[in-house]
Image (tube, rainbow, N blue to C red; front, side, top):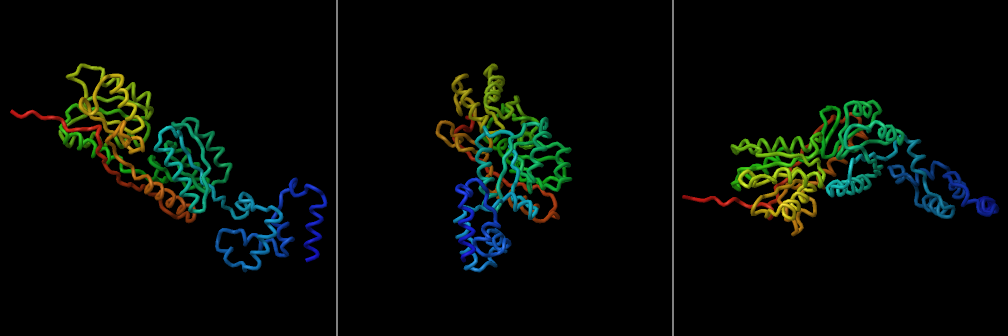
Length: 362
């Protein structure tokens, strides 16, 4: 014990030594009178930690507390070959759906022993190469992409680098990629069927960004649902998943003669739909739902506010996030997991922005 005290004094005889120099696990081992590997076992988060005796654990923790030691997660990552870091890629967080999703993904990863390193990406494939170069430098164990389209070249680069990728919400044609999405085709089909049952005939659509798989699938399902009811899209404009551009699209569709004006409109997500409702009511003087029914997609929190009371399709976000993280970790821990595309069904939520059309009988 005298040696331990001497060591402590020698370190502190230099005044601010401990403040100027990083404390290592070797320092802790010397003070505790154990091996450096014992210190590593104490701070390990895997099965090795349970093999340490309570007496040794106490000595190590007391020494670490005295020295102000904190294990270096990055150094440990280099040693064991796993960083426990997952790159999470988003192109924008303006849409509350994605902001909520990011928080849930980070928490789900953390609960599973991993941590998120968030990168903001270009919305299109242009410019992604530069960001990808930076991502690869962090030696991430895996990658989750959301609101991002990946080129085949980037998919190949991740594959060649041994980085598992799971796409959240969006999909890609590359068969090496796994994805977790809502069943957008079925969800949008249910919107079309509902509006047809309500008696609407002039049904318009405001699409999102046309390069997104979510928009493609929703438009595919919506068109199919109308066709099954003997209808087709009356008119269409593109809002690019942006509220101001969606409002402009609404002006384009509804600034027409009243007998050719849509009596219902499906908007490809709620973030645009609330802007469309504001444009229709406060700029164009139309009544929702008396003059026009409006349906969105996602069921973000604001959709349920009395101001909007928006009919929409809910995406099962908690289940989608849990499935995404589970799928990615399985790929990280076992490289032999086959790619898969998991579809999780949503549900039509009928609120006050839609109503059945009155039908005259003779």
